[in-house]
Image (cartoon, rainbow, N blue to C red; front, side):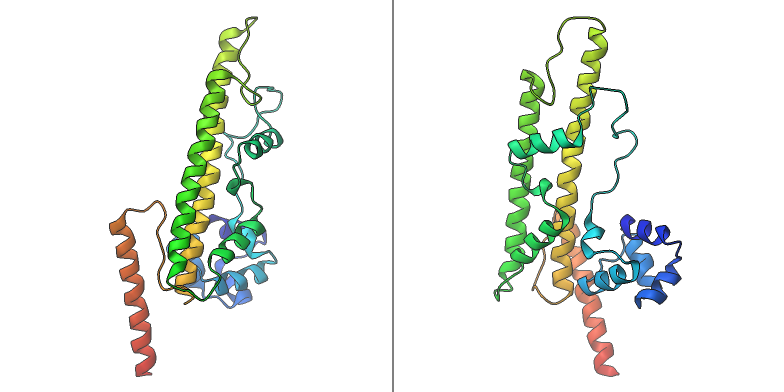
Length: 236
């Protein structure tokens, strides 16, 4: 989780400093930052409190890479405001949610007493997200062909080739941006569902964008760790 490392470094803390302040083990923090551990919701709350941030901040979108960042003085680059307006017009609901709205949506999926139904709800949400993404990208491709607010057609005049090339690059950039935002949403969905399982609030979890055998291997490893912890507790 790169965002945890970012918050820690902003405070000038080592992993040990964060461990001392939060009560979370240093090995656990190291594993979370390297993507080897999936933090429980209770762990995220401890880390957020120590870092003086909200839990939702751990799921926020990272800064754009320089290659994708808008360049000053180039009118061909679409502003975030214009892109969000276009996404709203094309019903890209999931990637327009605030962090708090995303978490509230996941909690809604996890609500109720029917624990076996929770993984099915998360899987259905993933499927609907994929369908929404396909529709939005289809709309972008149509705009590329026909022209529109985001990608106006190039008209004859000076620097025609250069302007056509810039339009092509902008189409690619917007596509990457949209796909990246949907990947972020799906990753958060994946992590949240798994955290519910680890926290004992769900009987199973689904793996988004993972091969079935990988998902089964991860589930088997988690089950083995839980069994080992139970045996250790019973023998204590």
